[in-house]
Structure formats: C-alpha cells, structure tokens
Length: 81
Image (cartoon, rainbow, N blue to C red; front, top):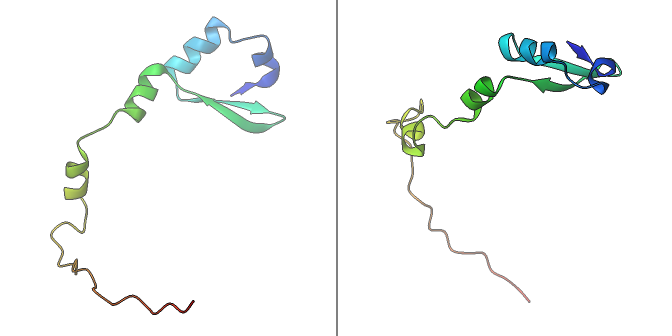
C-alpha cells in the first residue's frame, strides 16, 4: 500500500516496479483507499473484449430456455383531453 505522503513526491522506480510485478497497489488518502494502481498488462486483460455479443448471449444460463417472447398487443388506454 502506498500512502499519499510518499506519492506526493512522485512514484519512484521501486514503486513502479512493485506495482507492475505484484498485486494491484492501493493508494490511500487520509487513511482511506483512493486509487488502485495496476500494471498495464493487467489493465489490458481487464478491458479486452472476449468474444462477440452473440457469443455472450448464447453463453447465458437462459439460452435455450422456453421463454415467452411473444409481444403483447394490448390496445392503448383512452386519453381524455
């Protein structure tokens, strides 16, 4: 964990190396977590899309379930002006 007192002087190379090689680093402000620093490699893994939207939907636990997808054709309610 890196405190803001250390971070005000800027991240040292040791801080950068520690952040890149170990688990995500939490930066605190006044004793409360404020920012999390992760390596660029870890960030790219988090934001990279895996598969298409169709693949995502077909992997749903409801895929193939007998769902009522018929749309209701009710008449609109009356409007008095």
